Image (cartoon, rainbow, N blue to C red):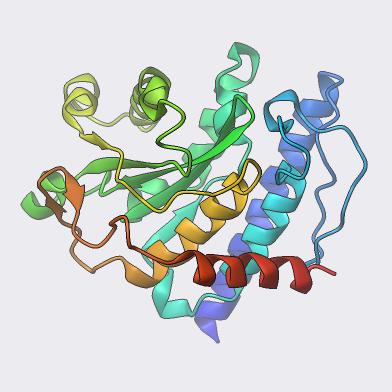
Length: 259
């Protein structure tokens, strides 16, 4: 019961931050999305932020993505998510605009991400969804320092060049460290591996957002207590990490649960 109460309080805090996001966007006269407290997803005809615009009709927009992720998170067992936290799906794209950078870093600082082993950062840029996972950034033990890394999961890895995001990601990580007043930030960030595992790939032009949500679900359920890297790739995320039939069932359930 105590854990459930803490979780509800975290949801309330996250909701308050999302309201701040909405206020900032509206203050710049950018129509973003409907942000509500309801666990049900509400489809919206509003225009979304330009970073979330889809290049292919039917691609998941930021409003639905956020709602799906909140519902997904609520349904994870308490003991599964104690080491995890996620950031709002538009924070990274907002960070890339100089006028929002300070606000985003303040919101991230309030999330206390260095107290968690794993941080999920959805990225929607250039009309495509990716998932960045930062691992053991706040670790103090020798094992945690040794296994600090960043994972970039891309369901169009073969078609796009996911490493084009590396300069932005490293700058993002550095700014987070500096916002937290972490020591030796530049040296440490430059040495943290950024890995792009060969994860299962989408078969069409619109499922990238659903793949990001599924990557999150599979990672929460499969990540080991002590994270390890083997020959440049993670020890449990491989090309056969899951099959498309399993993914299709996951995607269809997300859609049906939102109706």
